[in-house]
Image 1: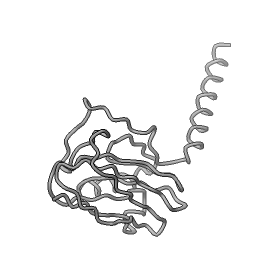
Image 2: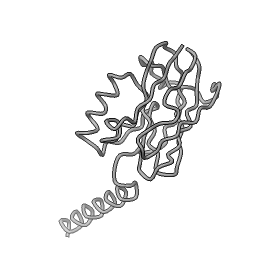
Image 3: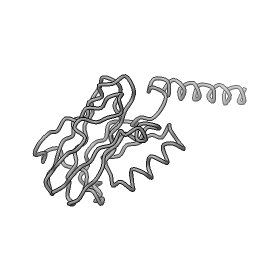
Image 4: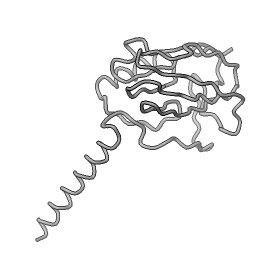
Length: 166
Protein backbone atom coordinates (compact mmCIF):
# COMPACT_ATOMS: atom_id res chain seq x y z
CA UNK A 1 0.00 0.00 0.00
CA UNK A 2 2.83 2.40 0.94
CA UNK A 3 4.57 1.76 -2.41
CA UNK A 4 1.31 2.44 -4.31
CA UNK A 5 0.83 5.73 -2.45
CA UNK A 6 4.38 6.85 -3.20
CA UNK A 7 3.93 5.82 -6.85
CA UNK A 8 0.65 7.75 -7.11
CA UNK A 9 2.22 10.84 -5.54
CA UNK A 10 5.14 10.61 -7.96
CA UNK A 11 2.79 10.40 -10.97
CA UNK A 12 0.72 13.33 -9.67
CA UNK A 13 3.86 15.41 -9.14
CA UNK A 14 5.03 14.62 -12.68
CA UNK A 15 1.62 15.54 -14.10
CA UNK A 16 1.65 18.81 -12.18
CA UNK A 17 5.07 19.64 -13.58
CA UNK A 18 4.08 18.84 -17.16
CA UNK A 19 0.82 20.80 -16.87
CA UNK A 20 2.73 23.76 -15.44
CA UNK A 21 5.31 23.47 -18.25
CA UNK A 22 2.63 23.24 -20.96
CA UNK A 23 0.66 26.13 -19.52
CA UNK A 24 3.76 28.34 -19.50
CA UNK A 25 4.31 27.95 -23.22
CA UNK A 26 6.78 25.13 -22.73
CA UNK A 27 10.02 26.96 -22.47
CA UNK A 28 11.97 30.03 -21.56
CA UNK A 29 10.00 32.33 -19.29
CA UNK A 30 10.14 34.15 -16.01
CA UNK A 31 8.76 32.12 -13.14
CA UNK A 32 6.90 35.20 -11.88
CA UNK A 33 7.05 38.95 -12.44
CA UNK A 34 10.04 40.49 -10.71
CA UNK A 35 9.17 42.56 -7.64
CA UNK A 36 11.33 45.51 -6.55
CA UNK A 37 12.96 45.06 -3.15
CA UNK A 38 15.37 47.88 -2.24
CA UNK A 39 17.40 45.67 0.11
CA UNK A 40 18.16 43.25 -2.76
CA UNK A 41 19.36 45.80 -5.33
CA UNK A 42 22.81 44.92 -6.67
CA UNK A 43 25.14 47.25 -8.59
CA UNK A 44 26.30 45.98 -11.98
CA UNK A 45 28.72 47.45 -14.54
CA UNK A 46 25.67 48.78 -16.44
CA UNK A 47 23.62 50.13 -13.53
CA UNK A 48 21.14 48.75 -11.02
CA UNK A 49 17.51 47.85 -10.67
CA UNK A 50 15.53 51.07 -10.44
CA UNK A 51 13.01 52.10 -7.83
CA UNK A 52 9.65 52.34 -9.67
CA UNK A 53 8.78 55.44 -7.62
CA UNK A 54 11.91 57.22 -8.97
CA UNK A 55 11.19 56.76 -12.70
CA UNK A 56 11.92 59.95 -14.66
CA UNK A 57 10.52 58.72 -17.99
CA UNK A 58 9.07 55.74 -19.80
CA UNK A 59 10.45 54.47 -23.11
CA UNK A 60 8.48 51.97 -25.20
CA UNK A 61 10.59 49.31 -26.90
CA UNK A 62 8.81 47.20 -29.52
CA UNK A 63 9.94 43.67 -30.42
CA UNK A 64 8.97 41.98 -33.68
CA UNK A 65 9.49 38.67 -35.41
CA UNK A 66 11.86 40.31 -37.91
CA UNK A 67 14.30 40.04 -34.94
CA UNK A 68 14.56 43.76 -34.30
CA UNK A 69 13.92 46.21 -31.48
CA UNK A 70 12.44 49.65 -32.11
CA UNK A 71 14.10 51.88 -31.15
CA UNK A 72 17.41 50.09 -31.55
CA UNK A 73 19.36 52.78 -29.68
CA UNK A 74 18.40 54.31 -26.34
CA UNK A 75 20.12 57.41 -24.99
CA UNK A 76 19.84 58.08 -21.27
CA UNK A 77 21.53 60.30 -18.72
CA UNK A 78 23.81 58.90 -16.06
CA UNK A 79 21.78 58.39 -12.88
CA UNK A 80 18.45 58.40 -14.70
CA UNK A 81 15.84 55.79 -13.73
CA UNK A 82 13.91 54.67 -16.81
CA UNK A 83 10.90 52.41 -17.21
CA UNK A 84 11.31 50.32 -20.37
CA UNK A 85 7.84 49.28 -21.52
CA UNK A 86 8.65 46.24 -23.67
CA UNK A 87 5.94 45.31 -26.19
CA UNK A 88 5.99 42.07 -28.19
CA UNK A 89 4.29 42.82 -31.51
CA UNK A 90 5.23 39.45 -32.98
CA UNK A 91 3.89 35.91 -32.93
CA UNK A 92 6.94 34.44 -31.16
CA UNK A 93 8.12 34.67 -27.56
CA UNK A 94 10.80 37.37 -27.18
CA UNK A 95 12.80 38.83 -24.32
CA UNK A 96 14.77 41.92 -23.46
CA UNK A 97 17.95 41.51 -21.43
CA UNK A 98 20.17 44.46 -20.43
CA UNK A 99 23.91 44.00 -20.00
CA UNK A 100 27.41 44.55 -21.22
CA UNK A 101 28.26 43.06 -24.62
CA UNK A 102 30.40 40.42 -22.87
CA UNK A 103 27.59 39.45 -20.48
CA UNK A 104 25.05 39.16 -23.29
CA UNK A 105 27.43 37.01 -25.36
CA UNK A 106 28.01 34.74 -22.36
CA UNK A 107 24.30 34.52 -21.54
CA UNK A 108 23.43 33.88 -25.20
CA UNK A 109 25.85 30.93 -25.24
CA UNK A 110 24.25 29.54 -22.07
CA UNK A 111 20.80 29.91 -23.65
CA UNK A 112 21.89 27.90 -26.68
CA UNK A 113 23.01 25.09 -24.36
CA UNK A 114 19.98 25.31 -22.03
CA UNK A 115 17.06 26.87 -23.96
CA UNK A 116 14.50 26.21 -21.20
CA UNK A 117 16.28 28.33 -18.57
CA UNK A 118 14.00 30.33 -16.27
CA UNK A 119 14.90 33.77 -14.95
CA UNK A 120 13.72 36.25 -12.36
CA UNK A 121 16.31 38.96 -12.85
CA UNK A 122 15.51 42.68 -12.74
CA UNK A 123 17.39 43.42 -15.99
CA UNK A 124 15.32 41.04 -18.13
CA UNK A 125 11.76 40.34 -19.17
CA UNK A 126 10.21 37.59 -21.25
CA UNK A 127 7.19 38.70 -23.24
CA UNK A 128 4.60 36.45 -24.83
CA UNK A 129 3.23 37.39 -28.29
CA UNK A 130 0.87 40.35 -28.09
CA UNK A 131 1.81 41.07 -24.47
CA UNK A 132 4.02 43.62 -22.71
CA UNK A 133 6.25 43.82 -19.65
CA UNK A 134 8.48 46.35 -17.91
CA UNK A 135 12.06 46.76 -16.78
CA UNK A 136 12.82 49.64 -14.40
CA UNK A 137 16.53 50.40 -14.46
CA UNK A 138 18.79 53.08 -13.06
CA UNK A 139 21.63 53.72 -15.49
CA UNK A 140 24.26 54.68 -12.92
CA UNK A 141 27.36 54.12 -15.02
CA UNK A 142 28.37 56.03 -18.18
CA UNK A 143 29.20 54.12 -21.33
CA UNK A 144 27.64 51.97 -24.02
CA UNK A 145 25.74 48.85 -23.12
CA UNK A 146 23.41 46.46 -24.92
CA UNK A 147 20.00 44.92 -24.75
CA UNK A 148 19.10 41.80 -26.65
CA UNK A 149 16.76 38.88 -27.08
CA UNK A 150 18.82 35.88 -26.04
CA UNK A 151 16.39 33.18 -27.08
CA UNK A 152 18.28 30.74 -29.32
CA UNK A 153 18.70 32.19 -32.81
CA UNK A 154 17.21 35.63 -32.04
CA UNK A 155 20.40 37.34 -30.84
CA UNK A 156 22.36 35.77 -33.68
CA UNK A 157 19.77 37.10 -36.15
CA UNK A 158 20.46 40.65 -34.99
CA UNK A 159 17.92 41.13 -32.20
CA UNK A 160 20.20 43.46 -30.25
CA UNK A 161 20.22 47.15 -29.42
CA UNK A 162 22.44 49.72 -27.71
CA UNK A 163 22.05 51.87 -24.61
CA UNK A 164 24.19 55.00 -24.55
CA UNK A 165 24.55 56.43 -21.04
CA UNK A 166 25.83 60.03 -21.14
